[in-house]
Amino acid sequence: MDLEQGHWRIPGEFVKTRQDYQQPMAASVVEALKSLRSQQLEKKGSDCVSGESPIFGLTPESSFKHGFQSVAPRAGIEGLTFHDLRRVFLTRLRERGVNIETAMQFYRQVPESDVKSAVEEIDRDCSSQGGTSEGAL
Image (tube, rainbow, N blue to C red; front, top):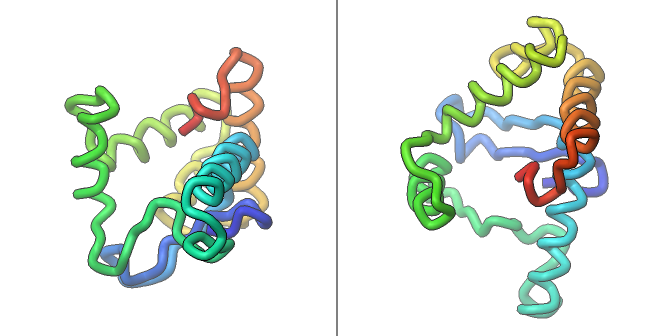
């Protein structure tokens, strides 16, 4: 995860295709993750946490699907799969008028600038509806 550039990256060893996956993050997500990183630093200290440390503590043996399945019930989320998050995000993009080609970036390649604009649009919309950084996660 590159918080300075506002990108998240999933290394190939974590995904089915075995290819690195990178996407821009909304500004509110970047700020929430920076806050989480600061909390980790305060709690564990700089000897244990660095700018390169994974925020969520995943290892190559980790699985997003299994991780999501284990934390969702603790967060009071029942009946939601990790893949549902992608579907909901794509639906929200389309509801806000993002063209289908850009929305489908999550399945194929389009210019990163289009995807970044789409993510910023979601962020603006959430902010205007009284959403918070915490709610964006």
